[in-house]
Length: 117
Image (cartoon, rainbow, N blue to C red; front, top):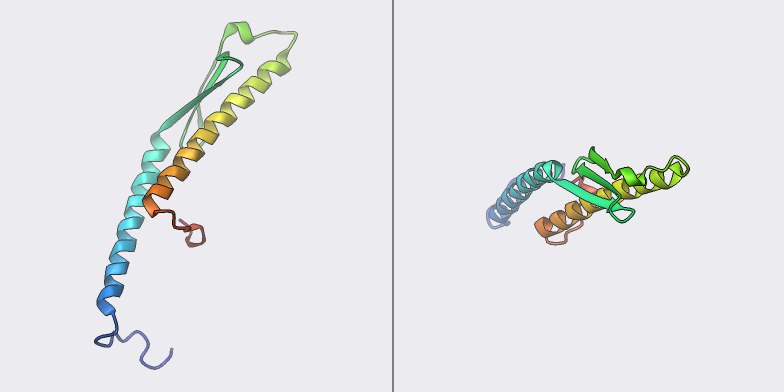
């Protein structure tokens, strides 16, 4: 360690560093609370003109899938599969967009990806 490093010499801005640490700790607590809230939220999307509806939570778990009986055509199973995939993917995108928006509002647009946040 370099001489004098980290000794908190008077007049070297030690108080400002403590303030920054407190702000970072508050931001971390706010982020954890926000992540928990986002995980509990549910996001819904539909496809096929509302024939298929999917609901996911913020943890990307499929919570429900509703299929209109009219969408079930034994001659065209692929179309039903495509509608399911589309509805689930759109619900996941909504969850991701909400998380990104919430994170940006909390961090003021700071790029904290390198910090594991």
